[in-house]
Image (tube, rainbow, N blue to C red; front, side):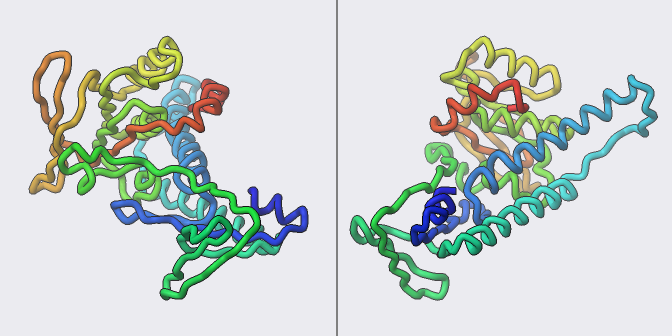
Length: 283
């Protein structure tokens, strides 16, 4: 957006953009977090969950819907990912129309006005500019103190690009990213559990946070409260066995899941946006 605005004022503009693949190998196209692994795919998957709820309600309004209703993750995922890819292409076209030069490389500063990077072919590219805007966004973090977390866990970066259903899923964390993902996973019929160390939506109004988690529980999302993971192991069945500590009972507990998703941190730059939107768009 900044590049296109600057170009409209007659400035010579370039964009240097590169997606470092996630530890699980997931990458995506031009457009940043919101387009590829944030607001857009999240809201589309929420819509899938809402449609499922509407099908259940429809029976009470006279609609004859065959039971049981089945959701196919791969069909939803293909549709969501195709839509995101269309937005990636749209951004490329818009940059070309504004005569913004696009470099699909990872850059680093060599001095205050020079950024350099290597192409996939190993060729060095150097770009100089009077003004350089850093707008890299953020990436989810893994709990490096939990054995097996990096090897076997995923983050929301991966969830939106999975081709097959995550199945029985443990979402670790109580951030809004955690609750959003757990909400639509439950909504499309998956066995979903949220593990939270302390309180949900830390930093937000706790009365509202409690209403959110109570609502989620009423729709089937399970919560492991005052619990924190200590180990993730892969079983012979390829399921993931998670060991955690229950702080209230002072016990060690285990269960197995198909997918473990880490959603531990909240990006504070979105906090003010979320507080103004909550309750109005399904967040």
